[in-house]
Amino acid sequence: MHALCADIKHQGRRLGFDLVGIAPADPSRHREYLRQWLDDGQAGTMQYLHNRFEERTDPAVYFPGAQSIICVAMNYHVQLAPSAEDESPHGKIARYALGEDYHELMKKRLHQLADWLREKHPDAKTRAAVDTAPVMEKELASRAGIGWVGKHTCVINPRIGSWILLGEILTTLPLPPDQPGVDRCGTCRRCIDACPTGAITAPYQLDARRCISYLTIERREEIPSEFQKPLGPWLFGCDICQEVCPWNNKAPISDDPAVTPRFPTGTINLEQLLSWKDEDYRQNLRRSAMKRVKLPILQRNAALVRQNIMGYTGSV
Image 1: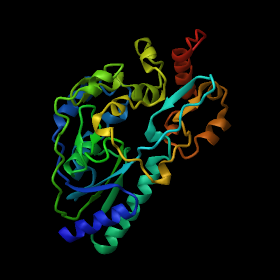
Image 2 (image 1 turned 180 degrees about the horizontal axis):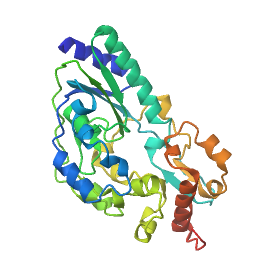
Image 3 (image 1 turned 60 degrees about the horizontal axis):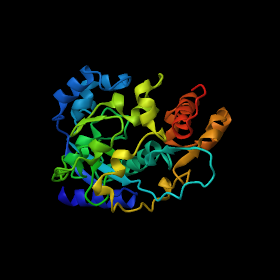
């Protein structure tokens, strides 16, 4: 099986994944913490996280017979062009959403890897997962040696940093696991200190209700007034805790065309966005993860960001 693991990793890299590791399909070690986190309401309006709790905390419940999990990661760190020189306000977009929709991209590659694996072992059963499945992705990636879960709750790889997208293949094959990642955050707390909303309430603990990514993407209701100014220029998502992380100082630039930014500066002209109609939205965000947010919510964010940048006092 060790030879098969080497072949899996080689095939995974050939398909475009930067990192591949193997984790055992054991129950989550953080089951009780997750239960308490949910009960405390820290998931905010993300009610779906309360659903399928048993599956979410035990891969063998989600996928009966699962013995191993092939974890993959893809580098999405891209070089951004200099900001536009015009005076129009621009809103910032989290880098993960600048290229193609990673859900579709990674799912396609995972299915190709799963098909290859079943050709080698026809009796093996597999199930691919990316983000939306009830799987504890970050914990599994850490178990598989992809990296460690940092104090900002993102997975950090010592070579690539935290600019990585995660995916998994659950399988009934008993594959030898890799050594888990080793926490190397040390005494650093730059991510904690840099968060403008105090979302990182303690090392390795995140209150989603305060997180700019949650507020701009997941929250459909009005953004609470206490968080409107701290949004700053962030239109969709937020990268602050990753931008200040020392492990990202020398992160390599991805050469994968799929993550090439559709908005080269990583920003959108807010005046133009506020004038978008449905057809503009569809054309500009075709095959983009930004379509997680519908146009009215995106324009809600744009109005708040414009106000932050320009001191605009009109209705938001």
